[in-house]
Image (tube, helix red, strand yellow):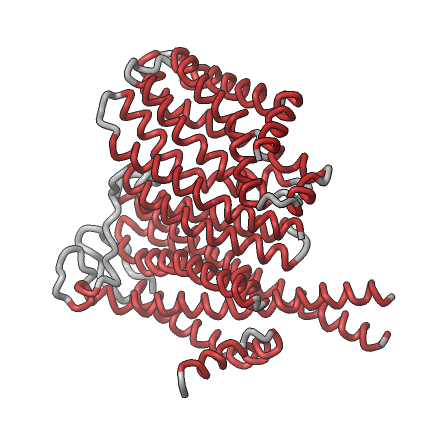
Length: 218
Length: 257
Length: 52
């Protein structure tokens, strides 16, 4: 299991895909926002939590189609399916690797980009906490979408269409935590909902992803 | 007849030939009934009901809006059940019925959204409001789109049936989650369900009750929409069965020839 | 014939209009595809029975 995780991480680093691209995309989206809505810092401060969440979500989405596709093309997935490691663990490791290479950098980058968008002071902490809680769910849901579309030639666009509606609950609670945090309100309820959704998704969705992957490998 | 033999009789319709033969016989009657109830309900509602003192004549939109919204969710529910039946008992008709129902559900969702927007314009003063009910319908519409796109994208029919069924199950859970999330995110303008509440029908519950003048034509047009849905599902499932048969025949031809 | 819809005539008529158009389109498309598939199946079946 550790070996597989290591291999995935090394591959992601060497290919430069996950790390670089996701972060660069997040940066560009954030920089483009003031150009499109205007430079008034009060307005930017109000929308900053939502913009950062949306940017992180799209950056996550960007690298999903490569999550399983490479292993599918060179036959690694077939090997993994026959290996003693259950497929449920394989997809969980894949999701973890995706989170470490895409989600975690986004979480760390969010405060820096928050400065650019004039995010109010108390918002920084909650921005980081909400992203840290929410992005693992995004990775796991994304792995499910990647498993659904892995055999398809032009799966990328379809993947977005399938995954984005599934992101709705996470986005709502996550952005709500960040927004309330930024406005200095109490965040307990959305925070618990966000944590609950993440926990449930991480615990249950790998089974669906593995089932779907088995169908695709048939 | 005991319940188990009755259930066995139900499973017989999972045989594609039997399904085609039965629906072939039932469909003409069904289309006729649909036409009568649907036209009857809409004509009654449109021509022979009084205007509401607050909403004026826009109250007439209810005869389309409520039934289509009702079917938009029922269609997804039906797809959930047929997907489960496919995953557990591997009846092809079940998977195809779910495929056949999806576009109908999508159109119903669209009608509910459009009529809601048209009604909201004079009543709420806006075409669109990020109200929880509207938003969850919009999300539901996206789920329908994704589900149909996945069916279209996959070549092998059994793989497509498996993958879309799992998507339908997972999607159902997320649709419910989204609904709660959306209610949390914004308490809305939309009135609560006012048609099928037991109290409202019995007349004991007077809050936002739909009065009987409106209720009877509304129930009739709901029946009409429901029959239309059933007829369309039967018809479209038949089409899917034939399309599948063509595929199988052509595959056999290639192997032999 | 058409009842007096008052100032909301446009609203009500456009709601009914779009809905009916959508429903008719759904039914028409279903039937068109149904006919096409049925004809194609008969054709394929005939060909199969001729060729054995």
